[in-house]
Length: 290
Ligand code: ZN
Image 1: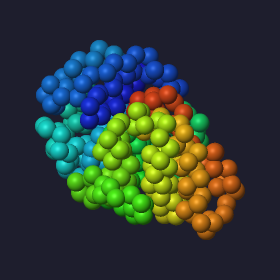
Image 2: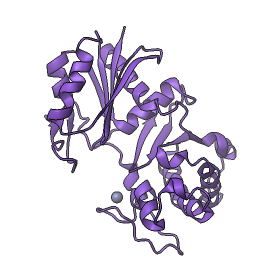
Image 3: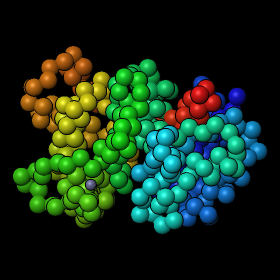
């Protein structure tokens, strides 16, 4: 059985076919233009691949409620042409196969717990820190949706006493994304993160904010592991700093065996940036089962 996978991002669309054991057979990447200039190329790619089902993990916000009349739509995005776009409907109409649908970050999380180092874990959080910040949550073996879906990137953070930077989120200023995403680093320090690799102050401050987010998540959701991916997390020196900062900010309040092994608790993504597309294959396989 061959499954289709679409990782729908704000800048690129990754399309692939694969099998349920996590083998990617074929893959292409297309730029994300307006829907009418993007979706037909993706449909062309899939239409003669004989896929049994399609899994889509999309940028959002998206409507994941199967009882909603706008299920499968991208909702309020500022991205031109994509607001209220029925992405699931477009593929359903063109391909007429079962379609699994979730957020981009829940897709990555699903990839990690199905095929990666976190295989089999039931209570895991995945956060991507790059151009923006997003997070997916699995609790009790189920991806959490709730009212909409979690928007971890916009949790509010308190500023470091020595950091005058106000934050760049247009909605909240000093949320996680506003303080710690790639554009915030560039805005605050006047250079891109990759050109600041040897500037310790940059990464200590970055760890202060990400560590604060870790503490909030540990206290509210009690995950058994937190996976950090995305472009900013390619700065490997960050992991050690984030683990130390998390421990420090927890202040000894929580004392469990899992937290004694911080290196096994806050971990990098393990699938070489294929976690998203592999999660889409799992979404497709699950959609076919249903
Ligand atoms: Zn925000």
